[in-house]
Length: 180
View 1 (tube, rainbow, N blue to C red):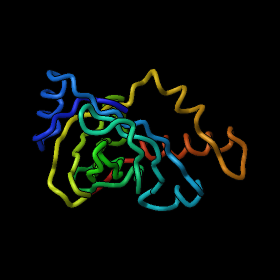
View 2 (view 1 turned 45 degrees about the vertical axis):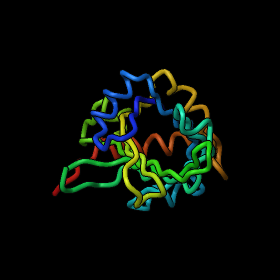
View 3 (view 1 turned 180 degrees about the horizontal axis):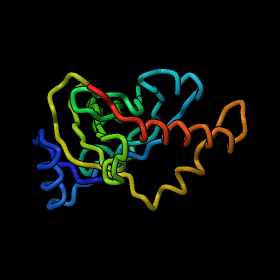
């Protein structure tokens, strides 16, 4: 995922506007690992692991992410939506600690394609509870969908069975409304 981010801003929309003007693009090259797909589907948080790298001009150059977690389709009853939360730590090129916290907001049933690919992002300095360092909006490019699907691997079953299971789970979650 990639998108414009600006330092010194805590509103993702303003950060995206300023990042676009300055051409400061945050790139999160992430891989999702699901150790036990059946357990993930049963867990209300649908927790998975994130691995990969984070890049932002003047801050981090393909720095490895650590303590990465993706929470899939978590009910947000107050907003009658489901959230996808991307959270991970990374280091700057000079060794400083940063934390990425991104959220996709999906109004179900029938979340739009835009909702499914748009992530509102805050970057904290020092860790998850540190002050907001910057903000912006990242997107998953639809042209990357095929590569994403081919990257999926299932442990203990065939790739096709794992892919069918995951896509069925995602389809059910997107079709199920969140009630207050």
